[in-house]
Every structure is written in structure tokens, then in C-alpha cells.
Amino acid sequence: MRDIVSPISGFRSPFDVGAPDYSEQDAAILGESPVVWLDVSNVAYLWQNTARSTAVASTNDPIGGVTDRSVNGNHAFQGNATERSLWNGSGAVFDGVNDALDFPVSTRTTDMTSFIVVEVTDTVGFLYGAAVSGGWLSYFSAGNNASTMTNAFGTPTVHVNNASIATVGAYQTALNAGELVIAEVRGHSLTQTGGDVLRLGKAFNGSFQTSCRVASYVLLNSSDSTKLATVRNALASKHGVTL
Image (cartoon, rainbow, N blue to C red; front, side, top):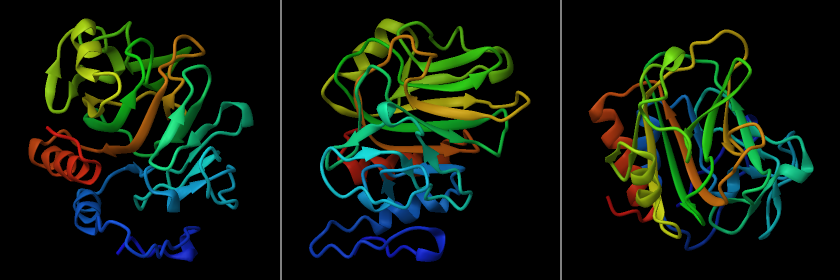
């Protein structure tokens, strides 16, 4: 049985007969108290508008809002209708031109981990970033690697399917265009002042973007290896990723 979602929270309840049962995997992810969980593989949490009042129902419907499955209400949004990704039946498809989803982060530490379950159609450009003074810092890009992502953001490390990625070239190879993978950034922070947002898709001020399908995004307030393994394994089981 799929999740029964409370309408009090602005969710709607999918009662799809014969749908896969991912309740065990979902419970494992929720058990690690994510700061944000955007389950964009599940149409029950997708909306065509930022108010989250018009449901995504059909292939190629635009995604203007995503309900955060954590308890924190960090819902994702895209107010510009021309920059909305599209639902393809199993995730959000970003066009690699200007599509993006933004989401606020009210909990900020120096030791956060992000998971992105993603299938890219190329390995050039930016996939994920965070707001910084004067622009965006991209965590998955053709221009940055672990050695350059420092300062207020700690010294994060990048991983694909639990394998450490040390260089840009290795990152591009590990993404395996056309294959669903779990990309991770461990040990990043959001400690700057002001309103912080994270961004999927167009992650660096209109520069290069990566066309891709995102199935899930999870942000943890930890880089504890046991917690990360729990979330990673649950995501892999749910989305059919081989680690």
C-alpha cells in the first residue's frame, strides 16, 4: 500500500491498486529525520503550481511545487512557469536550459549530507547548488570538485553510488549518462546569514545546466556513516539502484 497522506498537511492520498509497496523504505528514510525529502518519483507529492493546489496528474504536466515529506515544511517551488521541470511518470525532468526547483533550509549546520537519485542525459554542467553571497555554489558540476568546495561550506566530499569521487573527470564518468544513480555530497554546510535555499537543476546562475531526471532528494543534518547507509540503502531499494 502506498502512503496515506493527511489532507491537513496539504497532501492528497493515492490509493492506487497494485502499486508497489515502498512503506518499509519510506519508513527507513523518515526514521533518520531528514531536513528535506522531495520524493519526486511519487506523483502524490507533486503540484503544477507553487500554492500546491493543482495536482500533477499526467505526463508532461509542469512541476511548480513539491511537498516536503519531512516534518519541516521545506516545500520546493518554481514560480516561473517557463522554468518548471516536467513529470514523466517516474520523476522530474529538467531540460538542461533553465528548469529548476528551489527549496528553503531553515536548519543550518556544518555537517549536512545531500542525496540525489538522478539520471542524467549528459555529464557536463551543474546539477545541484546552494545560495552563497553573490551567487551560487555548485556541488555537482563540471567546474568544481571536492578540493575547491570549502570556506563557509566546510570541506564536502562527493560520492556516486557510495564511491568517492575525487576529480571532475571521475565525477563525470561515475554519473554514467542514462543510468539512475545516487549522488551524494557529505559534510557540506549552510552557515551563511540570510535566507538559505538549495536548488536542483539550474544550479549556478544561468550558466551550464544538466538535463536530467530526478527521482528523489534527501537532506540529512548529519554525515554519520550509519545514518547515511540507512538512507542510501532505502533509496537504492526503492529506485532500483545497484550500489
